[in-house]
Amino acid sequence: MILTLSFSAETHAQLRFDKQPLTIETKAGQRYAFTVELALDSGQRQQGLMFREKMEPDAGMLFDFDEAREISMWMRNTLIPLDMLFIGEDGTIRHIHAGAVPHSEAIISSEGPVKFVLELNGGEAARRNIAVGDRVLSRQIGNTK
Image 1 (cartoon, rainbow, N blue to C red):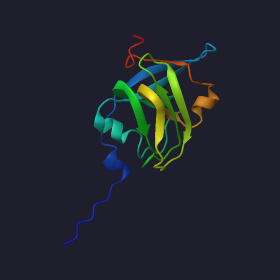
Image 2 (cartoon, helix red, strand yellow; image 1 turned 180 degrees about the vertical axis):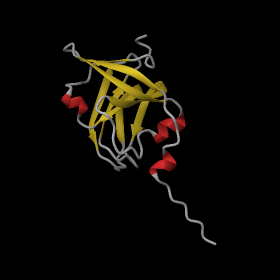
Image 3 (cartoon, helix red, strand yellow; image 1 turned 135 degrees about the vertical axis):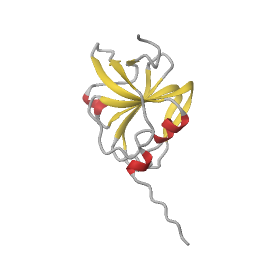
């Protein structure tokens, strides 16, 4: 007997993610509010935004890696283009990889030690003039109440 397993978006969407408000404050003084899902454990970080067909413009996912280190990400099974903001322990954006390509297995590096990665819809960083050096404020990062 041959057993065939098929995996669909429903199969992989079983993990639950808590949500939290998050604000990005640019050096120019602009403030952008988002509601982000939190990827806090290894299962959540592995699943991330895989198999999502869309995401609201003011939504995202914040990955917490527990300690600052070099982070590598990829887009396997991710259906929507993303901007990846690599964030230091203090909430400062250290690197931005804009327009990560859906389904790509190319490695995307933080280019230095970071503790957090914020994924937004592809193009959001440019649309909102978010840049390296801007600050990300959230309870999860620990720099706001």
